[in-house]
Image 1 (tube, rainbow, N blue to C red):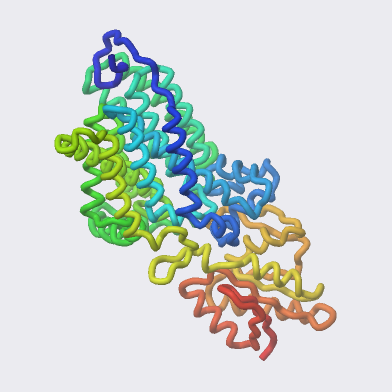
Image 2: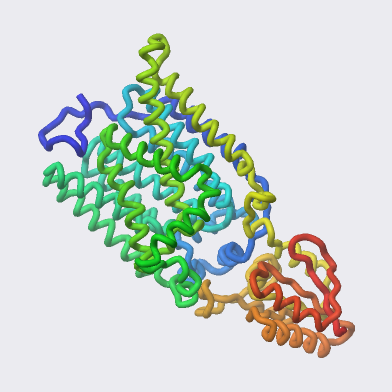
Length: 534
């Protein structure tokens, strides 16, 4: 007899032995994990220098543990703590790489957890779901030192647990779901978005089924999870939300009247990293949701449906950026997992129909072949994305590939004289402080930027930071650096290190440097310069 699930009555039901991972499941997951370094350029991921939005995250590990509630800033505190467990600070991207692996495992479990006719067909479904997530182009641009891969892993894991709870209802399973929410919110802010969808879907489904005892149980579990999420947010995470951060994200919060046009623009921007036409994606999402329903997972299907609705609502309310590539990475990956289930569901249905003409071929083999054709076409169509090193001409580029404050810092450290002066723009400062490993750093907080804190280097009085981005501020900083060099003994030189110079700041630096003799002393994406009076 089938295990008791959310779609049956509350009468006692004989429960079968709980399914456990088989050797074939373990082998499938092992192969999927081995594909990660095939699809991703792991070597570049682990060796590239940190850009400005990673540099402050990396720098946070150099401060005492007691400063963690401040230095974690907009990153989840658990994420910042995990970074401290990595022995080599140049290898901190091991943490997002681990979550790249965890989301693949979670996606396999998601597809595998449904009620398939045979274990073989379940393995095919799990593999199809995981491969869809693995091949999603958006995964290629998330090699940075931020929590976005954890967002995706936690989101898919919560859907797995909803499916697991539906498979065989018990208070213990609700407790596990609540516990994962408690842990997840420490490494991923989007837990606060996905968890209400998960518990809300379970509540809605049990209420429709009039399973009142279960409704009480899931309501209490949801309230407990809500208390935990609220406590973590207001106790820790809310500190990372400041006026500068709100100004930065203001364009990602559309008004209700702006929503149609905004969604159209964002869908167009996200289309390259989705890797398939909109109609195909929509069809597979519908197929995936219907497959969840057909396979006895109504609450999971409801949670999947609620998720984009909640995301849009939070965007309109100005709570969470709407359909922004980084912050909505979890949504892209979750939808990819649902689309993967859609592929598996369509393939399974086609295999059943095709077996009438091929009675000797197992449905699992036919389904596997159909999935291989469909996902193979998806992979071939997006082949330029795989092993993406951050800058593929005519395709896409990320800041990781076009910034290099590490080389600049190391070059100046090797070649500067004791009396020399170094002038930096503000976006180079965090990276300069991080890569100046022999120099002490001091935390300055609060500070009026998006990070909410600044860093001082008491042993580096030779460093002048240009905090503004316009020509006036840059000229003032260069003038200060030259005056400082003039007050020092000997023939002091002035080095210029700039990083992540974008927008109007490019022209501002060009105008400011036109007043001086400029010598570029290194090559690369962000060369070091020596300046002197013209």
